Image 1 (cartoon, helix red, strand yellow):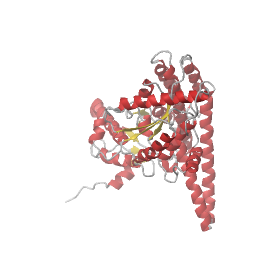
Image 2 (image 1 turned 30 degrees about the vertical axis):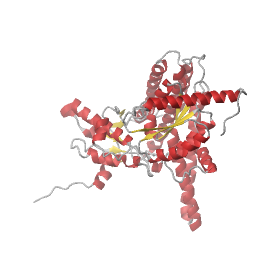
Image 3 (image 1 turned 45 degrees about the horizontal axis):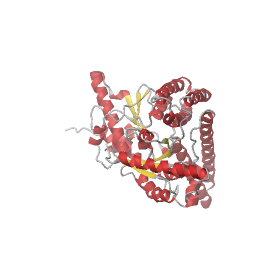
Image 4 (image 1 turned 135 degrees about the horizontal axis):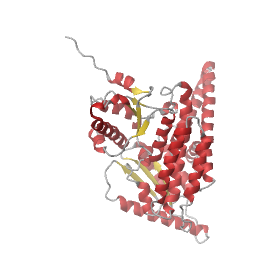
Length: 460
């Protein structure tokens, strides 16, 4: 009797989770950051890859149904998004539905974070549905700086990554324009309507000029957006308490997952700045550079000449890439700052130096905790009036960040709030936000009194 051969899990990971040419198939991009995900999809389309952003948070029940509860919240959200989309497409297209026409995009990172296992475990779930098991999962990894080698011809892979990096920084700046303008808009809804049109214009320009890497055209449009956005601000309105958000990257930038915490803080009188998308990619590049330095020291100790030559070449490549990223990021921010005083971004090297000097944390441990702790201290340095740490419930880096920041900022008289999420509505959430904003307003008033000479500076 002939038995049917079944693929092992290792085979499925090799065959159906990886980097492969997606020509002719629609790339499904998770809707993480409302602006960032759409500009990334536009970057893919600029290089001839059909890409669309998945509808989000409409099928969370599916993500919860097909998970054990031990996974972190973004896993459930993204799993629900892909399952919901495929089910709706199958219903819409009927017999014409063919899952091989799609590729699911799910990046990963190395290290202790569970994010590194999303695409593997979601592969297992998709394999439980016969009609979905033939859809491959495409990933890029932090292990090699999210290089796009393998999904594009070698002569285009680096060009795509550079376009994707610039469009990610553009997304950060468009967000910061929104947050700078919306709390002071002359008419309610004016900022959102303007920025929706601005996003459409930027998407169209990326699709048209992105492949040629016509960054000057993108910068020109950004300058126009910043100039027009500034006109929405009512100059008679005083500045509000500034609140800085740090935390796990997905939940803090996905409005549905964090229950629209930025708009809620704005509703209670805040001007909010969220940590950037760019900080993570810059951090990944910086970590690669640190690892290369370690490899060089070990090769030197072994007196391994060949290894020293190879590592030196890698060191040069890493320095070039980091310098290029800093250069492009500064260009985008400076173009905007010519017209509107948005919050700038910090360098990863500055954060590492701060953490080391204060003996608060070390990059040797890794995870987003390093960025969250350092980012919070950067907010304090820039005279923000409060810090919110947003993370999934049970998130290890989020818990580590809280354990360090809560007593530290209390000692510095800086209001601090933990905001963890798992999809449930917390009954005391509004009270917590109102109380936090009351404390932030008091801190702002105290700072103004010190500036005017009416009070002594608080202990720091």
